[in-house]
Picture 1 (tube, rainbow, N blue to C red):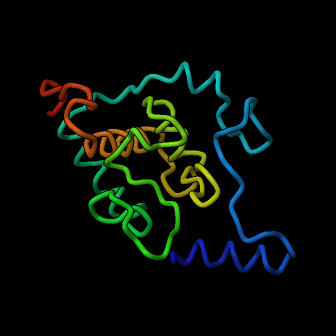
Picture 2 (picture 1 turned 135 degrees about the vertical axis):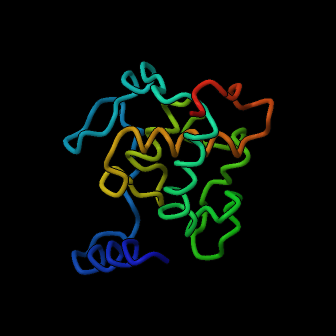
Length: 152
């Protein structure tokens, strides 16, 4: 379990709160923490082309921030975190698979156990690189066409 998760669980226990994360990104309206609303998510368009360069940048961030729960291959076969999403199978995702929904899941967190990464991955551009990397793990027929012109 990551140090950040352990600290959060410890703080929750100290405060007498349940040791689970608040569901992020599922709110119908923006909350006090600045999470994206459903309407905002529907309007999100990935400004970063789906390219080899973007996927490579996303991989670096993924390895730093996501491997612990989702595994090196994205299949989430990690014993420590129950219910971590298998990133290679979008048909089983509960928080949505549009690029905006993937962005929201990373930025604001998802489900009961995935915390928000907006503080860890501070640049919006970098969040989109992670979105592109995650989508690159999907079956080929579910991914957008690779934009080779943007690979420079």
